[in-house]
Image (cartoon, rainbow, N blue to C red; front, side):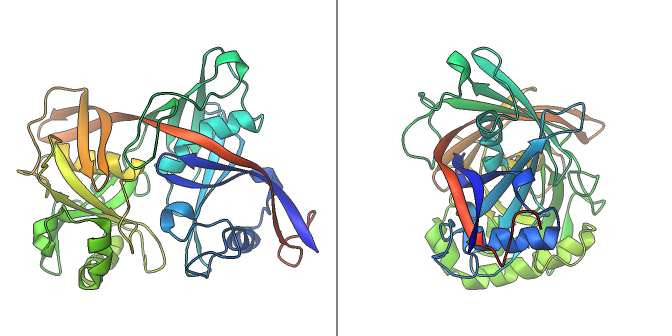
Length: 363
């Protein structure tokens, strides 16, 4: 016997995965993890027995519900399911999957459309961040067709604009949770920054790479990953995140000077593989690091004009633009908000099945 669970399968930005109504899943977190492992097919490099695509950007899950927060319409609970391990991490959030939350909430009937553009106020449950999504809804339904292109996604689609609020100190309560703009760990200078996503950020050259390598080249460099992981584990403790051995946060980023007209170039790690493009949350954290005085980014970043500014971050498949509102006062960065424009598409809707021994309706 199997249990059927309604779902939407959506691409959000450069990630994809199943989107569920939280009410259709177990309330108990251990039971929920068992279900998500089966849904994705975690524990196999190809995720052959589930919906996962064999990489960290295709084993993500979004769970939505009406919000009891008066500042939000919908709650977005995110799960990062592992590829080769039967492991689920609820610590981080995902900005790319977030791009699909507004459209998915409308498709699920959690939010009503409102004219040609519907504003959906979203609370990211994992971090408490508030985000406003602007979804194209002509004729009372979500429009997915348009002319907006996203590097790393084939073709074009309708834009989804995201405005991020209250992203500083997403997990730790501080932009610089160690109290320093630069820390020395294992001989490497790093900036531990928490804006939208806790990150450990370093100069690529300090780790013996250019920062312009392809994802394939980076993933093949296991010595690089071993050195970065040793630094990440120590940084996690210094940031107050505890033992992060089994957690995907903090993420890791390497910076280099831009080569194609951007403000800087970045390689983002998830953290045990290189991201094919760049995470939305990570882009905000990297932008904050690049703007803040005294970080490892100092001297690498192209000149910045007054706020607001469109920060152009080069990544392995192109460029991501992040609109940042900020101020510098007494040598400190006041990071006020960030905005991006991405695309989303509903790929499928239906039911996914898990063994009844894993989840039985009413349990």
